[in-house]
Image 1 (cartoon, helix red, strand yellow):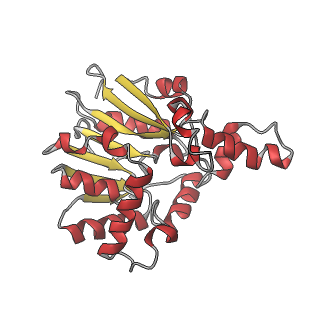
Image 2 (tube, helix red, strand yellow):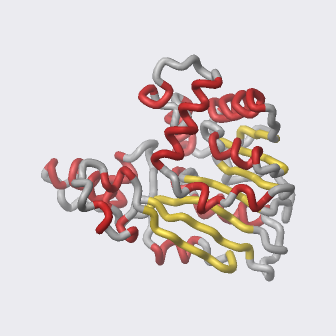
Length: 265
């Protein structure tokens, strides 16, 4: 039976079908689509602007482990899991991401079991994976809590871990978006949540405070949250000022959450 997707998630899907994250024209330039140069440019750009991904993901720690990525996008991080020797699975809401990631892994001589599904319902048995990874994806869903419940369900009880990134509402990036779409348009009463929902990437984008993430991950065991200052936060700021900006104002939350051993699944 075909999986049902909500109206909002269908809108999210339409947005990301146009172009998987990180494959913008200014990144790939004139490289042929799905060529080696194309994928090398995508990878180089991603890790130049988000160098902290490797420190959060720690890809090489999970050789031989069963890893699921929720939201494979252009397959850049998926390739790192493959290179690290993980037993690899991936899901995405879009056909574009599944095609891009599949071609990317094939080009580099790797394989993954990829599925085009809405992650609010994952097609896997309970307690299947050692790691579920999702970088900047879940906050685009209409119901992030449903995806996290599914992730918790499919993680193994013995040390199963979620690794990923969510957006941080109280960040310099949020302030910039609010100034542009609320304050400078004479609508200062618009909330941060409202402007992010309507003006950042696909419709429905969410961002979270520390307390909100602690609530969202309440069914997990240990939770580590690390604020990460991004190039989006420091864009156009004087270079001499940037080293003095606290990470607490960063647009990203790096997250590691261990499954509670007492969880019923």
